[in-house]
Structures are given as structure tokens and as C-alpha cells.
Image 1 (cartoon, rainbow, N blue to C red):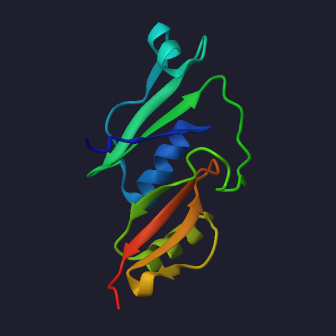
Image 2 (image 1 turned 90 degrees about the vertical axis):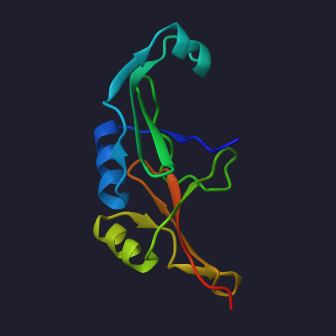
Length: 143
């Protein structure tokens, strides 16, 4: 088994593509395409579901973005303790530089960078334009 992707419901697919491209270098792996019909209704278990989707990625990181025509906004400040997927993680080379880039773009970062396990990992939780939580991580050296 291997990991495939994370699916994210977004309010504006173009804005989300630009965000993940500009912040992390993820690029579209396909054109934005409309979806709907019996197959999507069946797999999503949503009668009459329609919208647009796009897969973006870089290396082994793939995000499938869905802009649903029938979606309702989620509380952009939901606590990560809510049931369901709380966040997804992205390794970065320089977490301090990435935080500065995110801050300059107006991204909400939950806290200063936290160092875990005697320096073996640095991390911070952040929110995308729709309030979806992602974690940036930098590998360190255990001490």
C-alpha cells in the first residue's frame, strides 16, 4: 500500500491552486474539470452533487481540490480536536523561512514554531484560505 492524496473542499478552486502553488510549489497535475453525474453521486453519497475539481502536487505530495456547487462554508476557526481529519502535514526545508513567507501572505499560524523530541522535529499548524489546517514540519537532529 502507498499513500495517494488528500482531498480538500474549498470555496474557490483558483484561489486554492494559487495558494498552494505560491506557498509550496504545488502545480496542477490536470486542468480544472467539472464533475457530476451518477458516478460522483455514488462515490460521494451526495444526490445531485456537482462542482469542479483539480489535482495539484509536487513529488509525492498530492492534493485533490473540490469546489462543490452545493457546499456550505465550514467554520474557519474549527478546533483541530473536532472529529474527522484534523490536518495534513508538509515537510519543508526551512520552517523559519516558510513561516515568514506564510505570515507575509496573511496566513494564520497557530503558534510560533515548536521543537519536539529534543530537536528531532520542528512544527507549526497553519490555515489555508478556507480555514483548512495544515502542518509544516522540518526534520531536525535528535540531541
